[in-house]
Length: 109
Image (cartoon, rainbow, N blue to C red; front, side):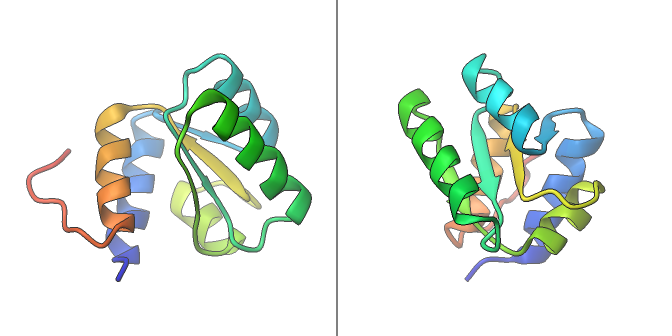
């Protein structure tokens, strides 16, 4: 079970630490220049967007998770209408993946 409150809190922290990229164009650019280490995409993003990001992430060996709604992802990062976000820092990535996989993060960040 995903602890969404902790997940959204970490996304907010990553945003404040300037370790987050939001939006399709910015995320694609970050994947291509290898500055992003994790992609989170909204469940209600368009099929075309999901396909593009799954292919890009597969090609560049970047983990991608389909999670929550656009509204929740946008609120968590404090930016309007964001279907895709990228995380640039390894510590945040490890913590977020652990939460998504149902584990608790103790003493991280």
